[in-house]
Amino acid sequence: MVARIMLVDDDTNNLNAMWRVLRQLEEVEVERFGSALEALERSGEAAFDLVIADYRMPDLDGARFFEALRKIQPHSYRIIISGYTDVELFKAAINHGQIQRFIEKPCDGFMLAQTVQEGLQQTSLEQEVEQLRDRVGQLHELLRDIAARAPELLPADWEVE
Image (cartoon, rainbow, N blue to C red; front, side, top):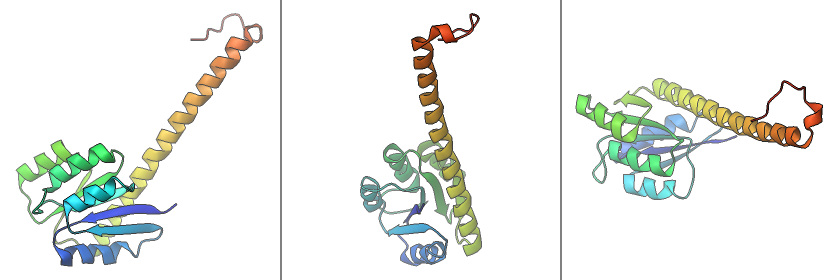
């Protein structure tokens, strides 16, 4: 399965540098956006497994971007990238955008790739857990139906909710 990644940064050089690193990863598709508003529009059209966005952008800061994105795509893994290490930045990003990771600019390509791979693994595990929950729910319903149709097959001390 191909993982979809969204990159959002108004700095074209930084955006292209991240893209060059991430396009080398296996089984990923990367889309780049120089505007947070354009990225939000695209997120309404296609699902992304992982999103990386700069904190300081002219049209919408990273915390507000992730807050809006989370409403559209609540299951995407969110990484904010910034050259600023302001405590208020962290608070806003965590409280509003519910980011999972922070990367400091400038970032090393190896560290970026590793962080993205870890995020994609986390997303994959969360999807598996959700699928297993659905399957357990289906099996529970099936067992409930079987029990309702054939009470004589159950031991006397069994109860079905």
